[in-house]
Length: 66
Image (tube, helix red, strand yellow):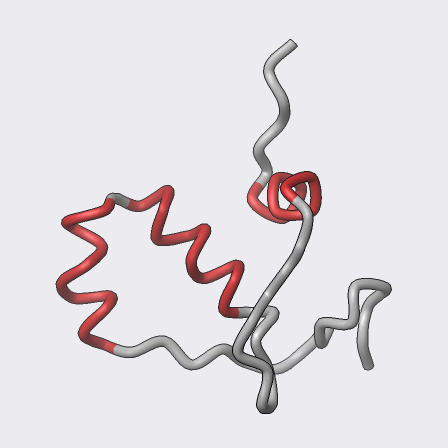
């Protein structure tokens, strides 16, 4: 099934080992998790993801500063 944003509720996301091994130490864990969230929207033949900042924040457990 899909959620209201059109992304699958189940399944997996393919992440290249080189990214995990090398880029995480360069860009940090926060940006890495953001990249993983964006990748989770690129399923099938999709190569672009356009979730809102609010949606990404909710999925990552980040809230807006007052």
